[in-house]
Image (cartoon, rainbow, N blue to C red; front, side, top):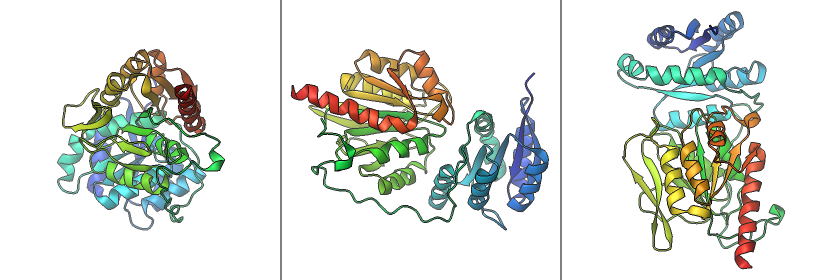
Length: 366
């Protein structure tokens, strides 16, 4: 038998510590080896118990969770699952935690904590299992560092920056991205590299309600393209990225010569809502050879079968390589399904996309 996953729970609430300990110890493959009420206690417990995974509250006394996470990822990188309250401020803090190296997060109910955490038990232990297999990275940025200045958005008709080395682009292509665990940072890295007149980008990132609006706003402040949550019925335009709203399904439809966003409340697919399978299946049907598919880091097989449908319909597909993934589940499944043309490190994906788009534009002009 494999050794049990050793977990340390860090939370200022004695009730939450007790509930999480009980949930963890009920699993045959994991054990809570220690708890701490604040980061100062946590340092000693982590040093003594050497956990495989840490669950970490965001708001705690003596040192907030972000400061502790930052120090941990600089000095002793360990997989961390954040426990976050579902508020607008909580969403912003959680996204910052993911930037600092947290693997994933769980939303802690504001009321009815005992019943709420029990209802989330399956999600909590699934994320602990995923975190135990994740590749954590050493992050140098301090949590109090000033955020990057917002990026000015040039008019969409403006020429790409001279440094991009990419000619004027065809607007026929649509970039279709699927991601899960580790995907928020991977998506950010790709979108920040795209020029302002890049083709439209449609994205499904596994994320619960209440977080995708903050995620989109954060990306919009950093990228030269415009980034927003997808809205039902809106036209999909070049120079824009559209993120599936948490708790909804996002797909594409055609209206005449235009691509249109479809956002609805249809059931989960592969246990996910939003699901990459839903988006990619619509991309195969609606976009055909005009799609460029990208499968990024994440656990499971969501989207793999639909990405193969995209390839069969003429799309060109890229998967993130194992070395740069936090979790190599979704890209691996897409590769095994025969859905992928290229497997690339994360840092090379944006340029590969734009070179593909530029080449398609040249062929179109010829």
